[in-house]
View 1 (cartoon, rainbow, N blue to C red):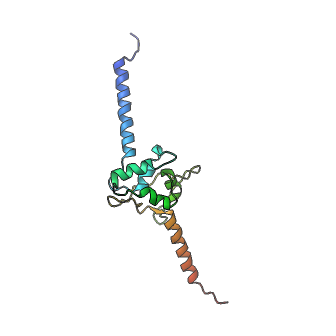
View 2 (spheres, rainbow, N blue to C red):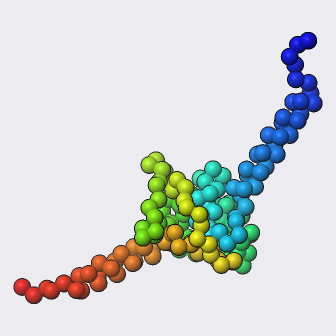
View 3 (cartoon, helix red, strand yellow):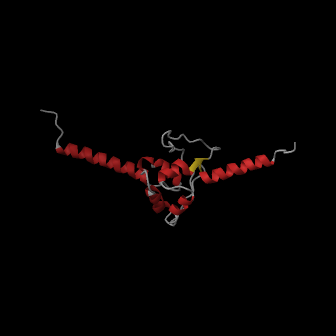
Length: 153
C-alpha cells in the first residue's frame, strides 16, 4: 500500500489552515475592548498598508464610530497613514517604558499591554504621547529650567 493522502485528508488540512488564518487575521484586525488606536496599530503591524488609514478606519468603525474626523485630525498632526502614525506620530512615555523600534522603518517592535482608554476615544493610552505634544512638553520643560537659572553676570 502506498503512502498517499486522499482528497479528504488534503481538504481537511486546507480547511484547518484556512481556519487558523481567519483566527489570526481576526485577532489582528479587531480592536480589543478599550484598546487605544496606537496599541491596536502596533498589534496589527503585519496588516498595515504603506499608504492610507485602512486600519485606523477599522478601529474607528469598531471602537469609535463617532470619530468621523479622525483622518483630518491626524493630518493636522502631520500624520498621513497608519504606518506614519507609528513611525512619526507618537513617542513612548519614557517614564513608563522605552520602545524598541525597527532600525529600517522606525515602527515600534511590540508594546506592553495597552493601558486602555474609554470607549469611543481615539487618543493614545498612557504608554504613548503624540509627538507634537511631547515636543511642546520638552520645550516647556526646557523653558522652565532656563527660567530657574541665575542670569546675572
